[in-house]
Image (cartoon, rainbow, N blue to C red; front, side):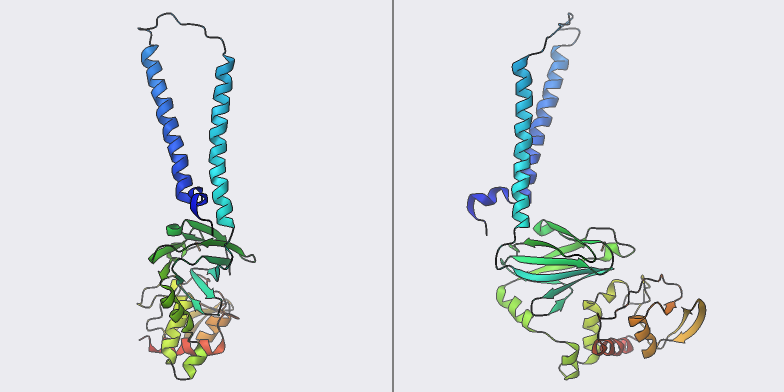
Length: 310
Ligand code: CUA
Protein backbone atom coordinates (compact mmCIF):
# COMPACT_ATOMS: atom_id res chain seq x y z
CA UNK A 1 0.00 0.00 0.00
CA UNK A 2 1.36 3.40 -0.94
CA UNK A 3 1.08 5.88 1.93
CA UNK A 4 2.00 9.44 2.85
CA UNK A 5 3.19 11.92 0.26
CA UNK A 6 3.23 9.32 -2.48
CA UNK A 7 -0.56 9.10 -2.35
CA UNK A 8 -0.88 12.81 -3.12
CA UNK A 9 -0.93 12.26 -6.86
CA UNK A 10 -2.32 8.78 -6.76
CA UNK A 11 -5.94 9.63 -6.76
CA UNK A 12 -8.05 10.35 -9.78
CA UNK A 13 -9.50 13.36 -7.98
CA UNK A 14 -6.12 15.02 -7.42
CA UNK A 15 -5.11 14.50 -11.06
CA UNK A 16 -8.47 15.97 -12.07
CA UNK A 17 -8.13 19.03 -9.80
CA UNK A 18 -4.53 19.56 -10.88
CA UNK A 19 -5.42 19.63 -14.59
CA UNK A 20 -8.54 21.63 -13.83
CA UNK A 21 -6.51 24.26 -11.91
CA UNK A 22 -4.01 24.63 -14.77
CA UNK A 23 -6.88 24.91 -17.25
CA UNK A 24 -8.59 27.62 -15.16
CA UNK A 25 -5.31 29.58 -14.80
CA UNK A 26 -4.75 29.39 -18.58
CA UNK A 27 -8.34 30.31 -19.38
CA UNK A 28 -8.31 33.35 -17.08
CA UNK A 29 -4.80 34.35 -18.19
CA UNK A 30 -5.46 34.11 -21.92
CA UNK A 31 -8.92 35.69 -21.81
CA UNK A 32 -7.63 38.47 -19.49
CA UNK A 33 -4.67 39.26 -21.76
CA UNK A 34 -6.93 39.23 -24.80
CA UNK A 35 -9.44 41.62 -23.23
CA UNK A 36 -6.61 43.91 -22.10
CA UNK A 37 -5.15 44.00 -25.63
CA UNK A 38 -8.55 44.74 -27.14
CA UNK A 39 -8.86 47.67 -24.77
CA UNK A 40 -5.27 48.93 -24.79
CA UNK A 41 -4.57 48.60 -28.52
CA UNK A 42 -7.90 49.70 -29.93
CA UNK A 43 -7.81 52.12 -32.89
CA UNK A 44 -8.71 54.95 -30.54
CA UNK A 45 -5.83 54.46 -28.08
CA UNK A 46 -3.27 53.15 -30.57
CA UNK A 47 -3.95 54.69 -34.01
CA UNK A 48 -0.49 53.87 -35.36
CA UNK A 49 0.17 50.12 -35.63
CA UNK A 50 3.69 49.00 -34.79
CA UNK A 51 5.68 46.31 -36.57
CA UNK A 52 7.10 44.00 -33.90
CA UNK A 53 10.01 41.75 -34.86
CA UNK A 54 10.41 38.33 -33.24
CA UNK A 55 11.94 38.00 -29.78
CA UNK A 56 14.14 34.99 -29.07
CA UNK A 57 13.83 35.09 -25.26
CA UNK A 58 10.03 35.28 -25.57
CA UNK A 59 9.96 32.40 -28.08
CA UNK A 60 12.00 30.26 -25.69
CA UNK A 61 9.79 31.21 -22.75
CA UNK A 62 6.52 30.31 -24.43
CA UNK A 63 7.93 27.02 -25.65
CA UNK A 64 9.52 25.97 -22.36
CA UNK A 65 6.65 26.91 -20.01
CA UNK A 66 3.88 25.01 -21.89
CA UNK A 67 6.25 22.03 -22.28
CA UNK A 68 6.78 21.96 -18.51
CA UNK A 69 3.02 22.26 -17.90
CA UNK A 70 2.24 19.39 -20.27
CA UNK A 71 4.99 17.25 -18.72
CA UNK A 72 3.62 17.95 -15.24
CA UNK A 73 0.13 16.87 -16.36
CA UNK A 74 1.61 13.73 -17.91
CA UNK A 75 3.52 12.97 -14.71
CA UNK A 76 0.38 13.25 -12.58
CA UNK A 77 -1.53 10.98 -14.99
CA UNK A 78 1.34 8.52 -15.17
CA UNK A 79 1.71 8.26 -11.37
CA UNK A 80 -2.03 7.62 -11.08
CA UNK A 81 -1.94 5.06 -13.88
CA UNK A 82 0.92 3.11 -12.27
CA UNK A 83 -0.89 3.22 -8.93
CA UNK A 84 -4.12 1.91 -10.45
CA UNK A 85 -2.36 -0.91 -12.34
CA UNK A 86 -0.25 -2.08 -9.37
CA UNK A 87 -2.32 -4.38 -7.22
CA UNK A 88 -1.19 -4.40 -3.57
CA UNK A 89 0.05 -7.79 -2.35
CA UNK A 90 -2.55 -9.73 -0.40
CA UNK A 91 -5.54 -8.17 -2.14
CA UNK A 92 -8.76 -10.14 -1.95
CA UNK A 93 -9.72 -11.52 -5.36
CA UNK A 94 -13.23 -11.52 -6.77
CA UNK A 95 -14.11 -12.84 -10.22
CA UNK A 96 -16.55 -10.71 -12.17
CA UNK A 97 -18.57 -11.96 -15.11
CA UNK A 98 -20.63 -9.60 -17.22
CA UNK A 99 -23.44 -10.95 -19.38
CA UNK A 100 -26.55 -9.56 -21.01
CA UNK A 101 -27.61 -7.88 -18.70
CA UNK A 102 -26.30 -8.44 -15.23
CA UNK A 103 -23.13 -8.89 -13.21
CA UNK A 104 -22.06 -11.96 -11.30
CA UNK A 105 -19.37 -11.96 -8.60
CA UNK A 106 -17.56 -15.12 -7.47
CA UNK A 107 -15.45 -15.14 -4.30
CA UNK A 108 -12.35 -17.21 -3.57
CA UNK A 109 -14.39 -19.78 -1.62
CA UNK A 110 -16.76 -20.26 -4.57
CA UNK A 111 -19.59 -18.10 -3.20
CA UNK A 112 -21.54 -16.34 -5.93
CA UNK A 113 -23.38 -13.09 -5.56
CA UNK A 114 -25.16 -10.51 -7.67
CA UNK A 115 -23.95 -7.65 -5.45
CA UNK A 116 -20.30 -6.95 -4.73
CA UNK A 117 -20.07 -7.24 -0.95
CA UNK A 118 -16.66 -6.14 0.37
CA UNK A 119 -14.95 -5.76 3.73
CA UNK A 120 -14.06 -2.20 4.73
CA UNK A 121 -10.54 -0.93 3.96
CA UNK A 122 -9.21 -4.18 2.43
CA UNK A 123 -7.83 -3.82 -1.11
CA UNK A 124 -9.79 -5.88 -3.63
CA UNK A 125 -8.76 -7.09 -7.06
CA UNK A 126 -11.51 -7.77 -9.59
CA UNK A 127 -10.76 -10.31 -12.33
CA UNK A 128 -13.15 -9.37 -15.08
CA UNK A 129 -14.50 -11.18 -18.12
CA UNK A 130 -17.64 -11.37 -20.23
CA UNK A 131 -19.83 -14.27 -21.22
CA UNK A 132 -21.15 -12.70 -24.40
CA UNK A 133 -20.42 -9.16 -25.65
CA UNK A 134 -18.30 -6.23 -24.47
CA UNK A 135 -19.35 -4.77 -21.12
CA UNK A 136 -17.51 -2.47 -18.77
CA UNK A 137 -17.40 -2.46 -14.96
CA UNK A 138 -17.78 1.10 -13.72
CA UNK A 139 -17.74 2.00 -10.01
CA UNK A 140 -17.76 5.81 -9.89
CA UNK A 141 -17.53 6.01 -6.08
CA UNK A 142 -14.13 4.32 -6.16
CA UNK A 143 -13.04 5.92 -9.45
CA UNK A 144 -12.49 2.66 -11.31
CA UNK A 145 -13.61 1.34 -14.68
CA UNK A 146 -12.46 -1.61 -16.75
CA UNK A 147 -13.77 -3.39 -19.84
CA UNK A 148 -15.23 -6.91 -19.63
CA UNK A 149 -14.06 -8.68 -22.77
CA UNK A 150 -15.26 -12.14 -23.86
CA UNK A 151 -12.42 -14.69 -23.95
CA UNK A 152 -10.07 -12.44 -22.01
CA UNK A 153 -9.44 -11.56 -18.37
CA UNK A 154 -8.92 -7.93 -17.41
CA UNK A 155 -8.48 -6.54 -13.90
CA UNK A 156 -8.78 -3.54 -11.66
CA UNK A 157 -8.25 -2.95 -7.97
CA UNK A 158 -9.42 -0.42 -5.45
CA UNK A 159 -9.56 0.24 -1.73
CA UNK A 160 -13.14 0.26 -0.39
CA UNK A 161 -12.42 3.06 2.09
CA UNK A 162 -16.01 4.18 2.58
CA UNK A 163 -18.78 2.16 4.21
CA UNK A 164 -22.15 1.89 2.50
CA UNK A 165 -23.75 1.05 -0.82
CA UNK A 166 -22.44 2.39 -4.12
CA UNK A 167 -23.53 1.98 -7.73
CA UNK A 168 -21.93 -0.42 -10.19
CA UNK A 169 -22.76 0.38 -13.79
CA UNK A 170 -22.07 -1.12 -17.20
CA UNK A 171 -20.44 1.62 -19.24
CA UNK A 172 -20.18 -0.12 -22.60
CA UNK A 173 -23.32 -0.18 -24.71
CA UNK A 174 -24.31 -3.85 -24.82
CA UNK A 175 -27.85 -4.00 -26.18
CA UNK A 176 -31.46 -3.55 -25.12
CA UNK A 177 -30.85 -4.12 -21.39
CA UNK A 178 -27.67 -2.03 -21.10
CA UNK A 179 -29.30 0.58 -18.88
CA UNK A 180 -30.58 -2.15 -16.52
CA UNK A 181 -27.12 -3.63 -16.00
CA UNK A 182 -26.83 -2.05 -12.59
CA UNK A 183 -25.87 -3.48 -9.22
CA UNK A 184 -24.23 -2.33 -5.96
CA UNK A 185 -20.95 -2.46 -4.12
CA UNK A 186 -21.75 -3.00 -0.46
CA UNK A 187 -18.89 -2.14 1.88
CA UNK A 188 -19.45 -3.66 5.31
CA UNK A 189 -17.36 -4.34 8.43
CA UNK A 190 -14.92 -7.22 8.26
CA UNK A 191 -16.94 -9.35 10.73
CA UNK A 192 -20.15 -8.83 8.77
CA UNK A 193 -18.35 -9.71 5.56
CA UNK A 194 -16.88 -12.91 7.03
CA UNK A 195 -20.26 -14.10 8.28
CA UNK A 196 -21.83 -13.37 4.90
CA UNK A 197 -19.01 -15.11 3.00
CA UNK A 198 -19.32 -18.27 5.10
CA UNK A 199 -23.06 -18.56 4.49
CA UNK A 200 -22.91 -20.62 1.33
CA UNK A 201 -26.25 -22.16 0.56
CA UNK A 202 -26.31 -24.10 -2.66
CA UNK A 203 -29.04 -25.96 -4.44
CA UNK A 204 -27.67 -29.11 -2.82
CA UNK A 205 -28.07 -27.52 0.59
CA UNK A 206 -31.66 -26.81 -0.39
CA UNK A 207 -32.30 -30.49 -1.02
CA UNK A 208 -30.86 -31.19 2.44
CA UNK A 209 -33.87 -29.32 3.73
CA UNK A 210 -32.02 -26.18 4.84
CA UNK A 211 -33.88 -23.95 2.39
CA UNK A 212 -36.96 -24.87 0.39
CA UNK A 213 -36.57 -25.33 -3.37
CA UNK A 214 -38.72 -22.32 -4.36
CA UNK A 215 -36.70 -20.09 -2.01
CA UNK A 216 -33.49 -21.46 -3.52
CA UNK A 217 -34.91 -20.92 -7.01
CA UNK A 218 -35.76 -17.33 -6.18
CA UNK A 219 -32.17 -16.76 -5.05
CA UNK A 220 -30.86 -18.40 -8.19
CA UNK A 221 -32.88 -16.29 -10.65
CA UNK A 222 -31.50 -13.26 -8.82
CA UNK A 223 -27.88 -14.48 -8.77
CA UNK A 224 -27.82 -15.84 -12.32
CA UNK A 225 -29.06 -12.55 -13.68
CA UNK A 226 -32.41 -13.85 -15.02
CA UNK A 227 -34.23 -10.83 -13.59
CA UNK A 228 -32.41 -8.50 -15.95
CA UNK A 229 -34.73 -9.73 -18.72
CA UNK A 230 -37.63 -11.40 -16.88
CA UNK A 231 -39.79 -9.36 -14.53
CA UNK A 232 -41.70 -10.87 -11.61
CA UNK A 233 -44.63 -8.45 -11.75
CA UNK A 234 -46.14 -9.29 -15.12
CA UNK A 235 -44.39 -6.63 -17.20
CA UNK A 236 -42.88 -8.00 -20.39
CA UNK A 237 -39.22 -7.04 -20.68
CA UNK A 238 -36.70 -8.55 -23.11
CA UNK A 239 -38.18 -11.91 -22.12
CA UNK A 240 -41.58 -13.05 -20.77
CA UNK A 241 -42.42 -12.18 -17.16
CA UNK A 242 -42.14 -14.95 -14.55
CA UNK A 243 -45.49 -13.97 -13.12
CA UNK A 244 -48.21 -16.52 -13.94
CA UNK A 245 -45.84 -18.12 -16.43
CA UNK A 246 -46.29 -21.64 -15.17
CA UNK A 247 -49.06 -23.47 -17.02
CA UNK A 248 -49.59 -20.58 -19.44
CA UNK A 249 -50.27 -21.25 -23.11
CA UNK A 250 -47.63 -19.67 -25.34
CA UNK A 251 -46.92 -19.66 -29.04
CA UNK A 252 -43.38 -20.74 -29.83
CA UNK A 253 -41.50 -20.86 -33.06
CA UNK A 254 -40.13 -24.35 -33.59
CA UNK A 255 -38.24 -25.05 -36.82
CA UNK A 256 -39.78 -21.93 -38.30
CA UNK A 257 -43.34 -23.08 -37.52
CA UNK A 258 -45.64 -21.59 -34.88
CA UNK A 259 -46.62 -24.16 -32.27
CA UNK A 260 -48.88 -23.84 -29.20
CA UNK A 261 -47.27 -25.08 -26.00
CA UNK A 262 -48.09 -25.14 -22.31
CA UNK A 263 -45.28 -23.85 -20.10
CA UNK A 264 -44.25 -26.90 -18.13
CA UNK A 265 -41.07 -28.48 -16.84
CA UNK A 266 -40.01 -29.70 -20.28
CA UNK A 267 -40.48 -26.25 -21.80
CA UNK A 268 -38.51 -24.51 -19.03
CA UNK A 269 -35.64 -26.99 -19.36
CA UNK A 270 -35.63 -26.39 -23.11
CA UNK A 271 -35.57 -22.62 -22.56
CA UNK A 272 -32.70 -23.00 -20.10
CA UNK A 273 -30.47 -25.31 -22.06
CA UNK A 274 -31.50 -25.20 -25.73
CA UNK A 275 -33.38 -21.92 -26.10
CA UNK A 276 -32.68 -21.81 -29.84
CA UNK A 277 -35.10 -24.76 -30.33
CA UNK A 278 -38.25 -23.02 -29.07
CA UNK A 279 -38.39 -19.27 -29.43
CA UNK A 280 -41.34 -17.67 -27.67
CA UNK A 281 -43.29 -15.59 -30.17
CA UNK A 282 -43.19 -11.83 -29.62
CA UNK A 283 -39.78 -11.80 -27.95
CA UNK A 284 -36.34 -11.26 -29.49
CA UNK A 285 -34.17 -14.42 -29.69
CA UNK A 286 -31.92 -13.23 -26.85
CA UNK A 287 -32.05 -16.05 -24.27
CA UNK A 288 -28.50 -17.42 -23.90
CA UNK A 289 -28.13 -21.15 -23.21
CA UNK A 290 -27.36 -21.84 -19.55
CA UNK A 291 -25.55 -25.08 -20.33
CA UNK A 292 -22.62 -25.36 -17.89
CA UNK A 293 -23.90 -22.36 -15.95
CA UNK A 294 -26.98 -23.86 -14.31
CA UNK A 295 -26.75 -27.43 -13.03
CA UNK A 296 -29.57 -29.93 -12.74
CA UNK A 297 -30.31 -29.24 -9.04
CA UNK A 298 -30.44 -25.55 -9.81
CA UNK A 299 -32.78 -26.08 -12.76
CA UNK A 300 -35.09 -28.04 -10.45
CA UNK A 301 -35.07 -25.23 -7.88
CA UNK A 302 -35.84 -22.64 -10.58
CA UNK A 303 -38.75 -24.75 -11.86
CA UNK A 304 -40.17 -25.09 -8.32
CA UNK A 305 -39.82 -21.34 -7.91
CA UNK A 306 -41.66 -20.63 -11.18
CA UNK A 307 -44.54 -22.86 -10.02
CA UNK A 308 -45.04 -20.52 -7.05
CA UNK A 309 -45.18 -17.38 -9.23
CA UNK A 310 -48.97 -17.16 -9.54
CU1 CUA B 1 -23.37 -4.51 -20.29
CU2 CUA B 1 -23.78 -2.38 -21.16
